[in-house]
Amino acid sequence: MFRAVKRLIDWTGPYRRRLYLGFVYSFFYNLFTALPVLGAVYGLHLILADRQGLITLTPDRAFYMLGFMLLTVAGRFWFGYLRAVAQESIGYELAAEQRIAIGEVLKRVSLGFFRRRNTGEITAAVTTDLSFIELFGMKMIDLIVNGYVGALVIVVCLLFYNGTVVVAALAGLLGSAWALQLLGSKSRANAPVQLAAHSRLAAAVIEYIRGMPVVKAFKQAGAAREGICAACRSSKIINIKIEKNYVPYNCLHLFFLKAASVAVMLTAALFTLQGDMTLPTFLLVAIFSFSIFDPVKPLNEGTHILEILDQTQDKLRSITTAEPIDKDGRDIVLSSYDIEFRNVTFAYEAQPVLKEVSFLIPANTTTAIVGPSGSGKSTICSLMSRFYDVNQGSVLIGGVNVKNLTSDSLMKHISMVFQRVYLFQDTVLNNIHFGKPAASMEEVVAAARQACCHEFISKLPQGYETVIGEGGSTLSGGEKQRISIARAILKDAPVIILDEATASVDPENEHMIQQAIGALVAGKTMVIIAHRLATIQNADQILVVDDGRIVQRGTHAELSRQEGVYRRFLSVRQAAEGWRLG
Image (tube, rainbow, N blue to C red; front, side, top):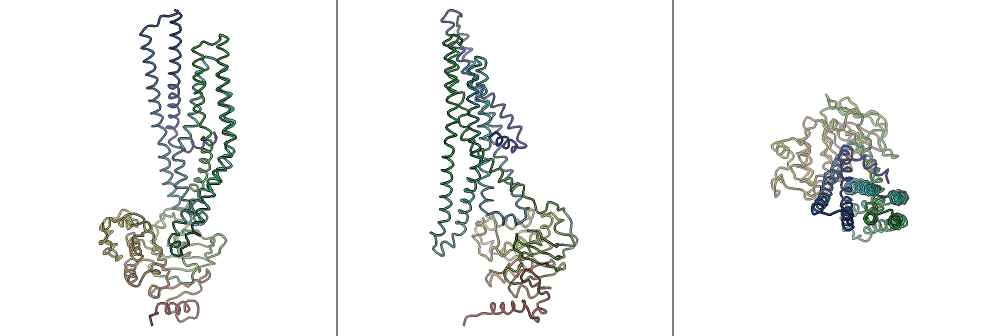
C-alpha cells in the first residue's frame, strides 16, 4: 500500500511541492479539528473547579473560551480550504499533460506498436484508465497520508494525558496496518485481472459500434451482441469475485480499530476509577476513542483502489516509455528528393512481406507501384514514410537514410493521400489546415480550388466553418478525398505518395480527383499505388511487385510488350474498366 502511495507521490513530479504543502495544511487541519475537543474539556475542568470552589469562573474566561472555539473552527475550515487548493487540482493538471505526452509518443512510435495492442486497450489507457488516476490519485494520497496524519495528531494529543492509552491506540493502528497489508497483497494479484476485463469490455464495445453497419446489413444483432454481452458478464463475475475476496481482510481491519477503541475507553475508565485520571480527561479520551480512528477506517476501500492505480500506472508506463521509432534521428535539411530502396527486407512480426527489394525513384518523376493484393505495395510506401523500420537493408531519401531523420523532419518532406481518408470531427477549414497550420485563409481557399472542392464547400451550411462528422461521415467519399488532396496541396511537400487514392471513387468524382492530383504533383517526386490504367499509364516508371519482390520495372509501353505479371494485370484491368451493359 505504502509503495503504491510513494509511486503516486513520485508521479506528481513538478507538483510535488504543492503536494507536500498540502500535507502540512492537513496536519494543521487535523490539529484544529482536535483543539475544540481539548478546549471543551478544559472548559469542563474550569467549571468543575469553580463548583468545587478552587477557582472563580469569570465572564472574561467564558468569552476567551468562546473566542478560542471560534478560532479553532475557523482555522479548521481555513486549512481545509488551503489543502484543497494545494492538492486537489494536481491530478487534473497532470492527467491533461500526460494525455498530450501520450499523443506525442503515439505519433512517434512504429505502427507495429498498434498491431501488437488492440484499440480497446489503448483507448482505455488514454481515456478511462487515465481518468481513474485523475479522479482517484490525489484522493487516495489524501485518504492514506492525511488519514494517518489525522490519527497521529490525536495520538500526540493523548500523549500529553496518558501514555498507556496511546499504546492501546498505536496497537490498533499497527494491527489495522497489518490487515491492510494483507488486503494490498490480495489487491495486487486481482488488479491486473480486473483491468484486463475492463480492457476486453472496452474493446468489445468499440468493435460492436464500429461493426454496426454490418450488424444491420446482415441482421446478425444476436451474434454481434453476444460478444459484448460475454464481456459484460465476464466483468461482472470478476468484480463480484474480487469483492468477496476482500471481505475477510476488510473485517479484520475494522476489528482491530474497533477493538482498539474499546481498549482505549476501558484503559481510561480504569485509570479514572483508580484516581489517576480526572473526569474531564476521561471525557476527552472517551470522545477521542470514538473519533481517533475515523480517518483510518476508509483505508480498506482505498487499498484496493491504490493497487488498481498502481497497475494502471504500469499500463500507462508501457505506453509512455514505448521506444520512439526516431529516437536516434536528427533534423536534416534534404537537398534532393530521390527515393532509393537498397536490399530491403521486411516482415510484420513473423510474416515476411518484402524480400531484398531494390529500386530508385529519381527526383521530380512519377513512379507507379502495381501488383496483386497483399504483394507488399502499401508496405513499400509505409517504409518510405518510416511508419515501420526495415529488418534489413535501407531506405534513403535524397541520399539520407530515413533512420537518420526525425519523424517530423521526414514527414515535412512527404504528403500522403490514402484510399481511406480520415477527416477529424472539426471544421472543414481545420481539416485542410492540418496540412499547414500557419496557412492563411487565402492559401486554404487556393488549395481547395486546386483540389476542386471549393465549390461544394461553399454550399455547406457554414462553408469552411462547417463541422463535419467523425471520420468525415457527413461527406461523400469523393468529397473527403478532394479535401484530403487540398490538405496535401496546402502542405506543398516535395514528395507525394498516393495510396489507392481513386480506388473507390465514382467516375464523375474520379475526373475531378485526377484534375486535383494533377495540381498536387506538379514538379514533385510522386509515388502512386493504383489499379486504374488512367492513373499509371503515364508514369515515368512502373514497379511491378509480386510476393514481396520487384518482378518487373519499366514504362507502360515497355511492360505491356513483355510477358509477365503486368501484362496479365493489364488484361484484367482493361476487361474490368471496359465493361458496359448489354
